[in-house]
Image 1: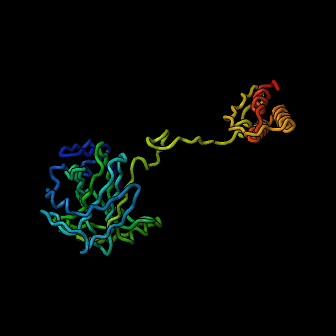
Image 2: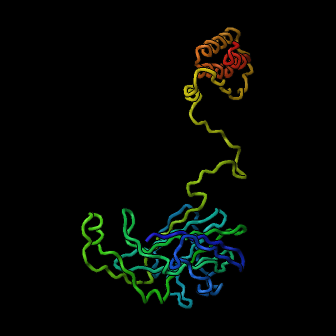
Image 3: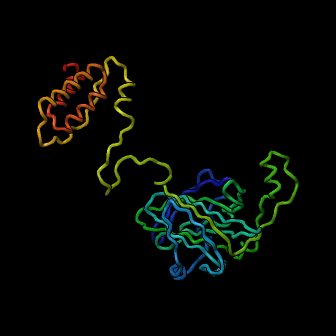
Length: 313
C-alpha cells in the first residue's frame, strides 16, 4: 500500500501546530496529538538519544539489552532518535522488519526541541509492505516533518504498546508472491499471521530537503568565494555558431604578467600566430596562443587577439 507524505510543523517550547494533510486518506492521518501518550519529562530526559544527521540510514535492534520504557500503555524496548532541526524539511522512513512471523509494531511520538509532543503516528500508520528486490516483509511508513526556525534538534520516540502486542498482522504468502512474479494465477492459500512482539529490528532512513536532489544555486553564507564552472568549451561553442556574423568570444581576464619582458622576436612570433589563426577562423587556437603569450610575459598579445577577431588585425 503506497504511503503518502504528511507535512508537520514542529514548534519550540509548549506550542505545536499540525498542518492540514494533503492527498492523504483519513485512515492514514496521524492521530490528534491529544491522543498521544503522556510521558513524564524526567523519563524522556533520562533516555539516551541516538543522533542521526541526514542523509543517513540506521538499523536498530530492539531486544532485552535495549533501553526500555514502561509508562502507561508503553511497554518494553524503545528507540530514541535525535534529528537536526536546521536542515529544512525532514523525510523519515521507518520500517519494522518481519522475521519468523514476528514483528515490532511501531508508534512514533515526535517531540520538539523542548521535548514537548508535536506529532503522533500510531502503529496503524505503519502498514504492511510486500518484499522487493532489496527489501523484505515489513511494516513501513514515511513521515515528513518541517521544524520551525529557532530549534537545534527534534526527537523521535519509537515504541510499542500493550494494545499492539494483543494484535497481529498478516504477510503475503510466498506462494502468492512467486505466482505474482511469474505472472501465474494467484493460488488460494492463506496468508501467514505475524505476531506483534516487543523486540525486533527497525530500519530508519532520514533525508533532508537539502539532500533531496535539488541543485543549490548561489553561495551559502559563510562559504568561500564561488569558483566559476565551465560547461563545454570555447571550441565547441564556436563550432556550433554560424561562420557569418559570429560574435567575438569574450577573452578571460588577463593573468598576471611575468616580471621579465618578453623578447621582441618571441612577441612577434606569438602575435603573428594569433593573427593567422584568427584570419583562418580558428579562434580557439588564437585564444590559446594569447594565453600562452601572456603567461610568458607578453603585453601586446591581448590587444592583438581582440583586434584580430574583430577583423582589424
